[in-house]
Image (cartoon, rainbow, N blue to C red; front, side):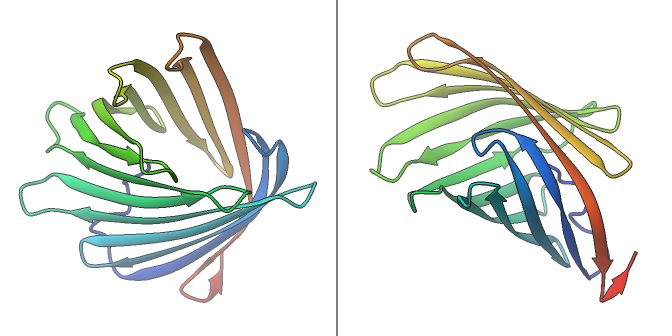
Length: 182
């Protein structure tokens, strides 16, 4: 979760571009980011080359104690939504604790715990998810931004213990900030 813009001056930014990797394969995206005070809201849509669409609605708030609250709703190509409510603790030595929940479309709730830390050009997350049956899954997430290229890699294990590995790359083709093409 990119939290760099939380607490910045008010603005609206619209990014468009292409993506490869992840569950949709490849396609185009549009992401609108609005900042006001200590809250950033992000609305994103991804459309695959086969016509499948997913959306993400995110609200990120910097709290008075230095922690950050991130609430989001992800809706997949079948119209099923997942609610993610996560709190990142106050920054200590470039690291934040991560706690929260993920609620799927059926109402099942997974507990989330781990760490978020800064990295060159991005961030890293190490997360453990625990489901209602007590099973655990792990995810190591590495995000890096280089110019107009954003790369996210995810490795770990699912609840049955099988390995997961995913790479997603976004190429930003245009950016409009406060109505001005950058």
